[in-house]
Image 1 (spheres, rainbow, N blue to C red):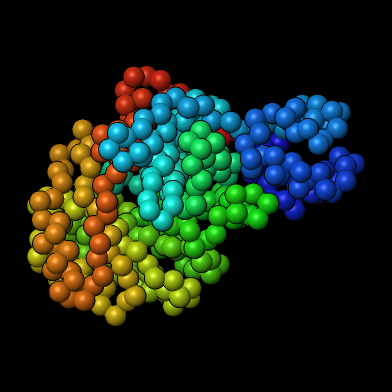
Image 2 (image 1 turned 180 degrees about the vertical axis):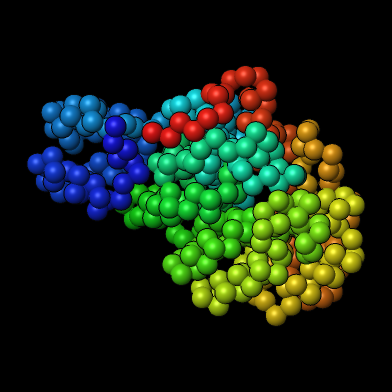
Length: 350
């Protein structure tokens, strides 16, 4: 079955011309899909014969809301979506004074193995298609009634491990006939796949690159993030400098504050040395408790921030949202797995 929603408008134009249809049908269908049409019969400006033909040839991805939890504290909404094959993923809608931000997933599960993250428990099942990433934005917006103006790719999965599909999603979500969300309103987070960071730099996209650093030294980072054993902090930082030189875009470094692991004054000093001379921003993240993990939230977040600022490093503490609704990445999906409501852990990519 053809996945029309994963096509660019240009590809869709070629598709319709092959069916003997005029090229303008592509724009019509593209707009319907990006408005969240759930069937071709909804597309009232298409001939009925074409509606029926598309229904026979094409697959429309429509995720099912398995669970929807809304915070009584700050209005954050956590979605657990079930995909066509039974796999579940998460999205989180966060409300800020500057607009509404949606955190999206790019994979069902994750292979990166970061010890503080619930997303990686059970490993990666499969990559998401561009349409499945896009659906999270479309249907969260429809369900909540909130206009989504910003996207962070910090949900389940490593975006650069699903490189081509993520690039296609970025192209689609940025399209003026679709959701038209500008690149400067999109942040992409990576644990540090340096060859893909270099490829991303070559594209010179104007998104914000967020690097999940979490430790300034190889010993600590390799313990927290297995990817570091193959990369190393020095090589990662060289890649980040190349990215900034190529794009001119300041990098945000994510740093989960873990009690007794990466929150000492010495580590703050090492981090400041690491970022010396860079145009960088450090986002300190109070750790969320993950039931299966022995790691606990740091009690020294403010002291660590002040130490960095004393070295001239810009550092902010991420506002903690949705603490009453399992808003930490992967927590809700993990609960669903325990209840046996997910499909078997195997790749079922169409």
